Length: 456
RNA sequence: GCCGCUAUCGUCUAGGGGACUAGGACGCCGGAUUCUCAGUCCGGAAACCCGGGUUCGAAUCCCGGUAGCGGUGCCA
Image (cartoon, rainbow, N blue to C red; front, side):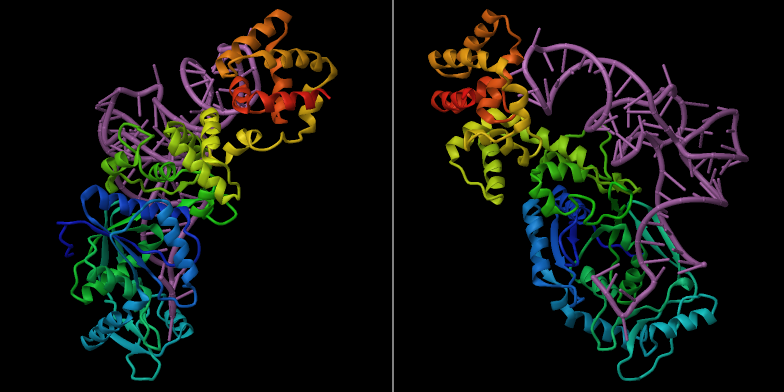
């Protein structure tokens, strides 16, 4: 088999725009990108839109949005495969002239009937000049076509079982297996990294490439990703698309880290990696062969780790843009101060707002919280707390902690009997950042107002 | 039906003939941190699909079975 020269890596991500980009596609894009960035190679984006029915501008835009959000930048493209159809037609004409492809009016039923008669061998048609006949590639009757796969090793397909497959429709428009082969060859792609579902198509593409006298790229077929139930990924499996991951409050760098590890592992079990480290360490040869299940719980944990390590300003920016998308807009400085006390408590951006909302809005109304922590016996203590609060100066977390701790000790109370009623009074709920931080951030005036309201 | 791929804790994985009483991570369970939640720290339960073979020795190699998955379109 002839192989493309491996001077400079040229890889491509070639999605068909049938809707949102799923995490399987996102991982494929990531692996291609990682290969290009790790080798100083080129990452090409090509949209496989030869099926005009399914390819809409909205779908293309969704994929591009997803790649941008993931920060996977491409060096060339996006190319439209459809727009390259004249190149494909030229190739088809050449193949017909060379006698390796021929027109055949047989329909799908005809092919089935033929195969039934011939013991399920690969279909072999009869050339015809009939108007509207599709074009098929002639497949040899014996021998086998071997795909040298970087991940799986050599995989051989008997030619006898392969149909003379259609490379152009009756109206002359090119089909996928022809277009892919032509584009990969003409774009000088050195490594085709794509989902496992294309493995069975690969011998067809190799056959086209050879018939065209073109170099055959290296192939790497990635195991497919499945949902929590072990079935193929779909909308019903929670956050299965990149957009959903973004809306759920995950950070792109965390998603990249998580996705990289779905199917690939390091020799030393390193789990948390910056994108730079990913680029440096990733190798397609180490990708596993078995399919993996997308587990959002591990992503959540990983995302939390990334969030906690973010500098406060970047953290605030991330929270701000997430809130904006959700329709909440608050002042930057106030948000930054709020984030400072909540940063180490959230695992996703979506979890931040519930923790800090009391700083921007009146307390929420949580009946169960009131019933449990604002009973008559609590109000007595709360009155005492109010007095301490009114006198505490400066009104900062450290001083508040000192005074409130002293108050708890003097009265011989359990901390919980004091802090939970106070928390419910100022936030309305039983969950918030640290109580001293929360009170300090709220400020004396608003805190006293809320305590008074609770005392009423 | 035919062609092809895959098989280590619930999940992601390390390991590729002896270092394996099978390692790590998420999750789970228990404990600690005595303001909630989260986090953090410590401890624990938890796996080589089954059957043959090769070998002194197999999670690792071979064969068979089973299961899952992909393809089998004038879809991509």
